[in-house]
Amino acid sequence: MVQQITKTTLSPTKLINRHNNCFFNSCIQCILSIPSITTYYDSTNFSRNSNISQSFQKFIKEYKKNEIVDPEMLLKDLRRKMDILDGREQDTHEFLVLFLDLLENEVKMKQENIKTEEEIKNSNIILKTFMGLQKTTITCQRCNNASTSVEQSLGISIGVYKDIQEGINKQQEPEILKEGIFCPKCKENSGKLKNTQFFYPPEILVVQLLRFNGASTKNNKRININPTIKLANRNYTLIGSVCHEGTLRNGHYISYGKRDYKWCCYDDSNLKEIENPPLSGSNAYLVFYSRV
Image 1: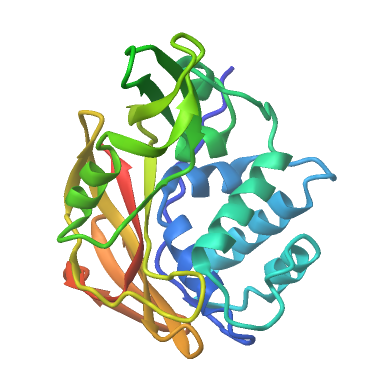
Image 2: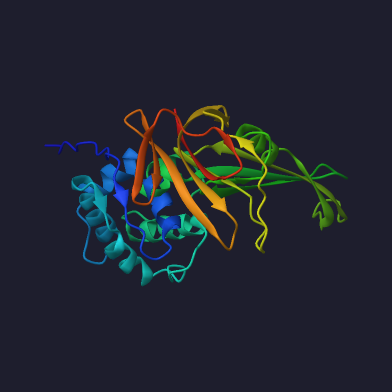
């Protein structure tokens, strides 16, 4: 007899910020707005070795029954695995990548070198939710010899353009490689044309806006957040975003998430239901879309 699993959709809950953890709080609120993730981690029996998965599950169960939650126990377990949880302000995108990697390392059916849509569909919850596949073709401009490779992608990083859709389109445009690359066919270091396209877009697409140059400056250019976008001929709808206010040295993260068709603004222990998230501004940093 197949066990019926009840879908877990979380009601909005406030999170305490004790140690400059707004980057964690804002990101985790967006993750908790993804029903496939909350349902899996609320209902799965994890082994004793799955410390982070167990801790995340306990956190979700606390989140379900309280109006305000202290994430310190989850953070304590994560500190054993993450150097960035040191009480200082951090990059929320870096945290997202590390967190998903920790979860993926613990789940069953961990797979390496996934190359096909079928392999993703038969993989684990993290890859099924967040992984897409891109095909990169490099063509010699002298003899037209082409080589193709398949790459895994957990999200997409784009420049700050007029809107998200334009940034995605620009990221997918062919690129002329200035430095000559040796061609095994014509035996020349000639120019190459690089073309990267998604052929399997992820269930949840995380778009990172490249606002930071890695030093001390931030690109505060305004961008329009499309409520819907297209990637690889698939439609996506907006479900969340993380915004960074202020500067690199003195900044603050807040987030917006959609659950049961209702939007909320999450600002640590401040919570406000809103009609719609801001769809234009200079603070958007991570944008979450769900494939329709």
